[in-house]
Amino acid sequence: MKFFMLSYEANFPKMLISAMLGIWFHNLLDAFTAPDIYVFYPLKINPFFGLLSRSAAGWLYSVSFVLALLLYTYRLKRNDDF
Image (cartoon, rainbow, N blue to C red; front, side, top):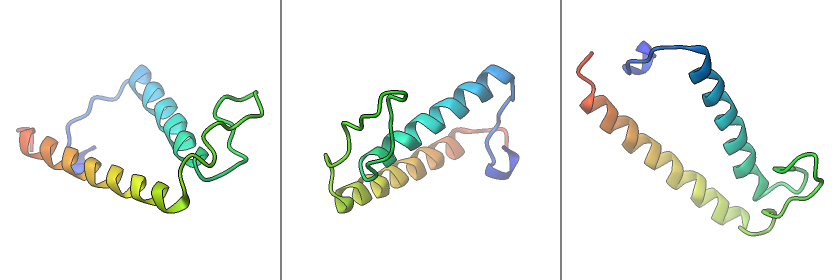
């Protein structure tokens, strides 16, 4: 994580949990706008489709991105390793 100027100790459990959460959250966000995303696979249902319009989902993605940038900036300022 030196590229992002964040300290990080890699170990298999941390990488596995991060990967699984990333996949699940990505699918959860896609479920609002795509009818063929099955968050609760193998059940062929998508209870989230249609709860948000495409524009509302776009706003959700934009707000999430801004919050991620704020968290990243906070972690950079707090990190004394670099």
